[in-house]
Amino acid sequence: MKTESNMKFVDYQKAEGVNCSSFGYIDPDRDGCPLIWRANEIGEGEPRKDSPALSFGRAFHAAILTPEEYAKEFVYLHEGIQHDLFQEALATGSKAKKFSRSLSTYKVWIAKQTEEGKTVLDIDQVERIGDMQDSLNRVQSLRDLLAHDDLETELSLFARLTDHRGNEVACKGRVDALMPGDQCLDLKTVASASPMALGQFIPRFKIHVQAAFYLDLLNANAYDCDQFAFAFIDKRKPHPVTYWKTPDHLIDLGRREYKTFLGWIHDGRKTNHWPGHSPMIEFPGWFEKMCEEL
Image (tube, rainbow, N blue to C red; front, side, top):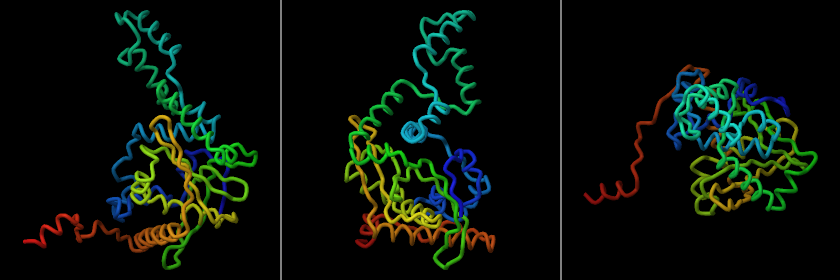
């Protein structure tokens, strides 16, 4: 069992342990299976693409939780940089009338940022992050928690958790925020934070599994946590926030699910047998009804 409060994300990624995000590769409800999970573990699966939504989510997390890292990892393509790149292009013979991303100087600049591990944000993204931060701060309970002097952010946790049969599996997780009194919080940017949308989002992406997994990691590291909360921030203006505490019955369900996944991982490692998809095809209800009527 180990806790690291200042571990860089790249070092966390390299550290041993099954993390919660990998369950998407093994969960049948998310088109996963043990064979796909194993392929991704050894680097032979489909490469995970860094979508604009993921990049934006990372930027928002960094801006809220680790502002100093935000300044290092993300760079804003502001008007000053655009002006300099445009002038450089003109000096090399470009006939362009204004700055554009097709300029050779821009392409050289963006390649340099990528090489240095930085993500480029445009003005719309920077302004949206600021607006979403303002919206988050309008929720007094969240503002007070995130402003607390004893707040711990991006906390890396390591422990051996048990599967549904009691077998131990090395696990790891990275908690967004841990507040005084061992209150846990995870920030999520979502397309919609409405009750109806979240009612679909939470089971689809197994948010309750994350809550249970992180709670057990925390408690294995001598924290005394019994509740895990989420702040869902709507990406649409004016960015309403839904502050949701995972109910106990969903924690219990999430715990049963992640322990089942750990069991499949334990069995695969022990026998080197990694099953693919089940042959039991699940048809939608309307199709089943159509078949019954034949």
